[in-house]
Structures are given as C-alpha cells and as structure tokens.
Length: 308
Image 1: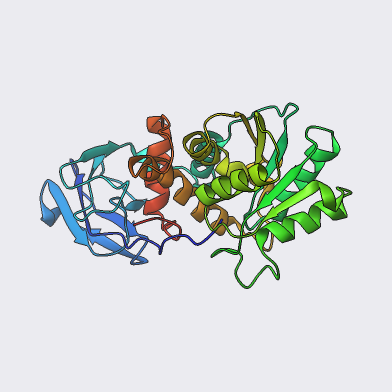
Image 2: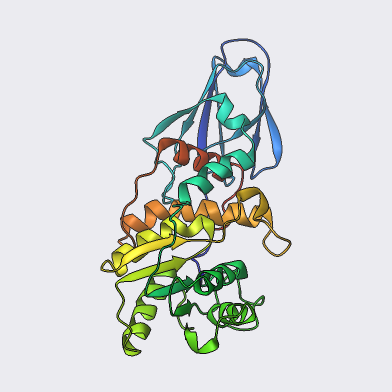
C-alpha cells in the first residue's frame, strides 16, 4: 500500500550460452519482444548484450543445441540483481517453468499461515484489496478482539480507484459486514507499512488502549513483509499476521488482474532483501528456490513494482 518508489530501470545484461553442437539458438528478450538467432559461426560460446530490461536473464524460445546457460549479473546497480562479478547457473528447466508456478513459489514463501488467536486489537493495513478489510471484520465478528484499527491513506495502487482513504474504505466494508463503527479506529495518514504501524501505535496509545497482543491483517503475499516490518517498528506485542484465505489461483479479480498481482508479488519479495539492508524491517531467510523464481520472473518482465 502507499506510494511506492518509481519502478526500477533494469540495466544491461550479458548472457553466455554453451553450444556444444551444431544448430541455431533462439533466445527471447522480454524487453525487446523479438528473437535473436545465434548461429554456429559465433563459435563455441555465443554471447550477446542488450539494454532491454532483462534483470540479468534471458528466456529461451528454442534451444536445440544448448547444454547449459550461464547468466552474468547486471552491469549497473539495481537492488537485488546480481552485480557484474556474480556468475549464476540456471537449469534450462527453470526457464521452461510456467509463470504461475514461479509466482506460487514466491506466494508460498510470503505466507506465514498463522492461526489467529484472541488479541487486544486487529490492525488492518490498507491496500488495494478490500477483501483485506472484510477479513479483518470477520475476525472481529468471531470475537478475536474488541477493537479494529484500519490504517492507510491513498497510495499508488488506490489513487483514482478508491473514493476515500484506504482506512475509511476498509472501515466502511467492515461496517457493512456488521462491525459497530464505534469499535473501529481510523488512521488515515500513513503511506507505507512502517507508517501504518507507527501511526496506529500512536493512535492506540492516545486512546488509552493497552496492547500486548496484535492481529495484523494484510494481503496474502504481504504477510511476511508485514511481520518483518512490525517486529522492527513495534517489537513488544505478541504478533500474529493473517490474510484473506484465498489461494493464488483464485486471488486475481477484474480490478486486481493476474499480471498486477505478480508484479506486486515480485516487488514485495525484492523488498524482503532490500528493506532489510536499508533498516526498514528485520531480515528474513530466503531459500535459493525463492530467489531463483524471483530472478526468472524479473526476466519475464515483471518489473513494475521494483524499488531502485
């Protein structure tokens, strides 16, 4: 939620392919949208360079003579993209995996799967998905907390789409489901996750609410980042993070299409590393499989939500 930094411009990348046999190698660069043909005349190694937004990796359309591919990192500094000294090997199967399968790897990593238990407050973090506010309302109606806080102003994903702030939009959705309006506190000034937490903490303190246990509600693919940010900004309370129980395949809607979901998901996984390095959240371990899937999705053009 909130105003995200401008999308990153991915630097040039150099890619080498080992060509032990004869024939042509066709590779597709997502940024160029055209095929390049490298013939046997190029020698045992064929190398090419492009200024397209590749993120350090090309994807194959056809590779009859390929034994392996080696990807040299980007030549300029984009956070989370390997530098020029990095040499990474990817199997051909990684390039062949479906985009949805790659996205599911990231989705599963970002989910924490906490089982909500009674708490002092339900903190609903604003976003472009009203189902988050509705999920917070259902937790309240189950009796899991006596108070809801809806937090968030208007961000890049909600400007022009929501008539009100994200906090007010989510609060209205909760009231429609039966949550009494006096049971909802609204924090409508924050524009990022850190501010959500800081300003909500201040709001609760000014209202005299003692907090020792919190349920944070976010989108499924932001659970881990919400947890990591909360544990840095407000480490004292016992924390649970939850989201609408919607699987990846059922999550997109006409207002939140699949490509936008993947774009944001890729951006949030990048933020897990970059924001920890910048001191915005606590570090989280990331399996190699997750980072490999992230790298491949960047190569396929899902760069609209990256930070610079």
